Length: 436
Image (tube, helix red, strand yellow):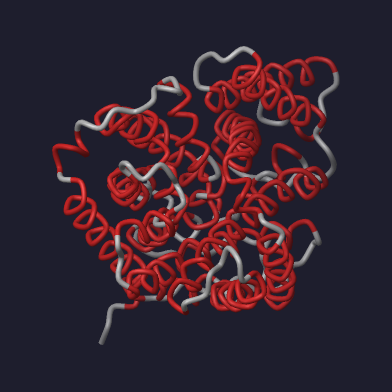
């Protein structure tokens, strides 16, 4: 008989605001596999293509390694621990620091809208890929593109609408399929350009090291908050939560470098156009579509959880309906041309998520015994910290560029929140200052 402790499936959440019982948790490899599927996404390849054009092959390596092995790993491990310790989703954890009202209005909205945006961007690119398979010119035949992209979006969304367990099976073919796609892409790039030409390729140096790190963080910065949505299905052991982000690291680092190799000398970050330039066979575009499925499910699932929190939905049946409606809105966003604003979207994400993470990290670890407690109302100290964090990120990114804006945004938001809560406790204690 199969050991139930090793094979038991994660129970679907009937009450979304309740913690997942320890008895229903699984080995860290389960969430890590989901994270791997999350990291295999079209935007990762696109950013790789952008980096090699700016830094060259040798210059992009330190940017990628520093971002993933230092910033991403540490940040994700912290968020993973929060999710596993509480058994709650990110938008619910945020209630302790922001208050339940603000978590619905601000935090869940940011998570929901940005998850929707990521889903729409990848759906648009996957629609382009499927058009290539079907012989449809997605630039001139917009009616055909709309029909194909709408169908792609609906197919992408179905498993995530039905919950976490329905999503896991896609990783077993999406990740291997994606790796096959990358291997063929590298082969064709080497065949067309040669290794010496690729490794000695010089970038245009239009971006600083810090700006490059910021670009990569913009790609992954949502994980500073959303990792808890999946680590909540794992066990609350420190080592387990350090290991869970390995799914992101072992896929993300090679994938972004492969994206750079594939995009070397192409002059574009559009992965479909890059594949066409490399001479990919038709099956390659099919694999691209299939391999994108996993990350798409995760974006859709996070969107559904966040909007369910906003609407105070507490049943899994209600979450299904909310996710379905969100999917239809995401398809509309796709058809309106969000792909054309890819870099703008990265910039918005890099401003919002770190400020939220700074408040949540500070609140969770400063409070005694790291216990989560639902807080009613609206914590204005968290609001101030969130706004200040975004302003610092914006100023240091666009007005007076200095340092790594997302990290500065996170640290400043955490500091402002800490000092503000201490001041609040000394002058007018309330339910939010307990534990400070």
